Image 1 (cartoon, helix red, strand yellow):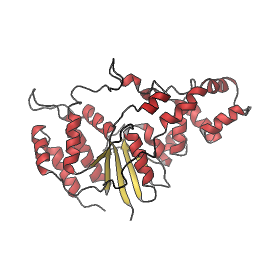
Image 2 (cartoon, helix red, strand yellow):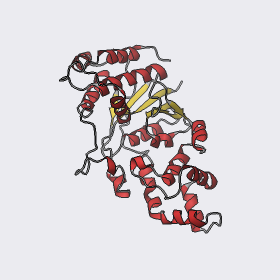
Image 3 (cartoon, one colour):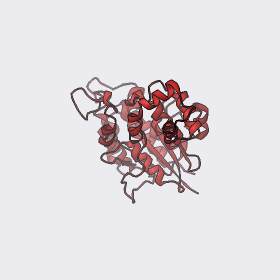
Image 4 (cartoon, one colour):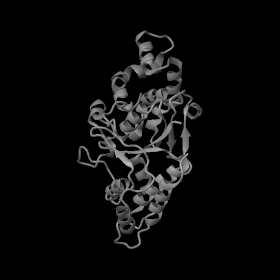
Length: 311
C-alpha cells in the first residue's frame, strides 16, 4: 500500500491562522499566540482528516529568490518593507510567533524543511516530484501557484485552503481544474497563469489577456511554446489585437517560466526523515509552549491526532 505524504505550505497556513484566529490573550501583556494556536489546530485537523503516514512542513528560506527577481524585478516587490531589499512585510504580532512555530514542529518531531535560495513552493515541488510512483501526495496551501503540481496519474492533489480553510477545503484534482478553469491539468494551469499574470505576485501577464482567453489559447495550441511558435510562423488564426498583445509581451514571456514554474530539482537530502511520528519527541518543550503561550488545548489536540490509528 503506498504511503500518504502531506506537504505543508507552512507560511500559507500560519498567515491564515494569524488572520483567522481571534487574538484572545489572557492579559494585555501576554505574548501573541493566535498563529501558534491556529497552526497547531490546523495540523491536528489535517492529520485527523487525511491520515498521512509522512509529513513535511515546507519552509520559505527565501520568500523572494534572486533567480526569480532577476527574471522579473516586480516579483513580490509590493510585499517588501519600504526601504529594504529582502524583508517581507509581516504583522508585528505575527513575527515573534514564527520562531515558536518552528520550535513547536521540532518538539512534535515533525520534519521542517527549507532550502536556501528557494521558496517553500520549490521544496514542495521537488518532494512531490520525487514521490511520483511511491506515495499519494497531498499539498496543503492557500496559494493557487501550486495548482501546477496537480497530476492524477501520479496521485498529486492540492488541499486548497483559501476559501474554506482546512476544515472545508477545495480538493483540487484534474477534474476540479477542468470545471473551474476549463484546462486539463497542472501543467496547463501553469502556462495559463503565465499568460494571465498574477497581481498578488507582481506578475504582469500579457496585457488584455485574461483567464478565459488564456485558457482558450492553451487548450487550442497545447502549450505556451506552441502559441509562440504559431506567432512566429504567422498562424492566420492569431491576428489583430491578440497577436499584437502577445508580440508586445515577448520579453515577459521569455522569462515568465523561470518565475512561475516551481523547481523540481532542489537539493533536498536523500535521507530526509518524513515519517509522521506517533508521539511528540520533546514533551517538556510542548508543555513550555502550552504554558507560555496559553496553547494547551490545540497542542493537546495535536498530541491526540498523532496517536490516533492510521490506515
